[in-house]
Length: 148
Image (cartoon, rainbow, N blue to C red):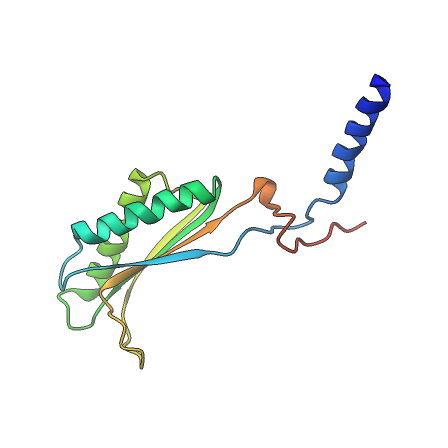
């Protein structure tokens, strides 16, 4: 009977391996915007608190982080807008590092904000974090079927 149980467990393990993804299949991204004062790249205490709570939530929900991507923005009227946008993104990335929000893939960019009809502030950093799965295969998220 013990040999049968061991064989059954081994068979189930093999079936799971054959049903694995054939390509990358990670979870959808989660976002937060961190807002800045005019002409500043310093994160305010209120925004730091929001980022801290969000980071804690990300850790609780997702033990694996695949991608961290930041888009720093500055308004055209701000002093040295392009550099300011990049400094904002770097400030947020530094805090995320302290909160251990690391991904296999990391990138940041700084851009001058182009106003839109929604009236959003251009003084922000858009934080995008994509949770990952072991071996980049999330079997419950419509994985790419393994080819024969």
